Image 1 (cartoon, chains in turn red, blue, cyan):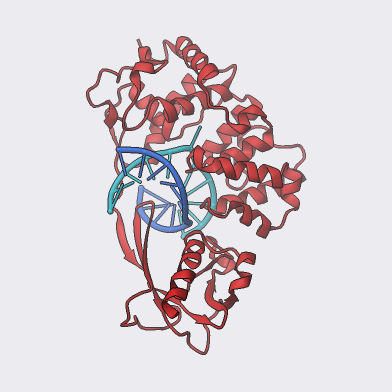
Image 2 (tube, rainbow, N blue to C red):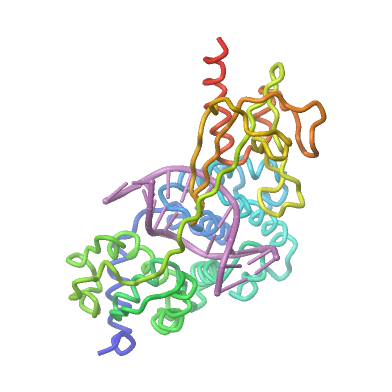
Length: 341
DNA sequence: AATCCGGGGCT
DNA sequence: AGCCCAGGATT
């Protein structure tokens, strides 16, 4: 028996479980096109628990497309600060403007996918949840569930390749009547039952359909190759003058992190690596890169390179520091004060 | 197809 | 420390 042959039974088992087991998330309680769009954008590469407080604050400040479209970009970014992937906020802002201007309003998946920040996953989510279009979402959860249901032991070269490999099956299995709930149920199952490390098969509502359940290596399905992590070092400057700190403003033309401020790179200031011990050494990981960032106390060159500015500490709240730099400046201000007194 | 964006949570 | 997460845009 294949999953396709048992499609109806699979769908109803999943739906029955979802009806009673789903988490009470704010966009489920009070659905609307706008709330669906915001929740899906916020949820990209972000765990639900992390985004919940942001979602509530966002809805309070920008309750609908019109309010969001009329807001300043600065205001929009302030409400996203700390969530990461800031292009999502810019795209959501652009999307709101496009939506307000659009006539007729987008409904079909294809129309949504033409909007900024909306790709295959998000367009399917919006079309199915808000407009009952029978299309399947294929995210990491869905890939994992389908690979296990079919006991697919192949090794995939990338996440993208795995998504591609399971899209057809996902489309075949999606429930025609209530695709939005079906899609959310699949993701809910992946998030709460079909866990990556320790799948909870004993309480799984669709264990009876699962060919992988008896496999000793179920927790290794699907196999997706990871890139080796690259290590790089970026030396940064901690330069103070009076009650101001030297920061670099990433140009609008940058495309990524445009308009945000960061601690200057020593290289951009044309300064050599100081002999002194750095004020702090920060490390962070972004996808497959591990970045080490020593921050040195330096005195700035007299002639500042382009896009470098002295920002008074009192004005820091009025600018957007890129995520980690915001934390570092707050933290190091205290450290630097202690060292100087 | 490869690379970049960023936090927090979890083991 | 390392890995993962309701991905998309750019090159």
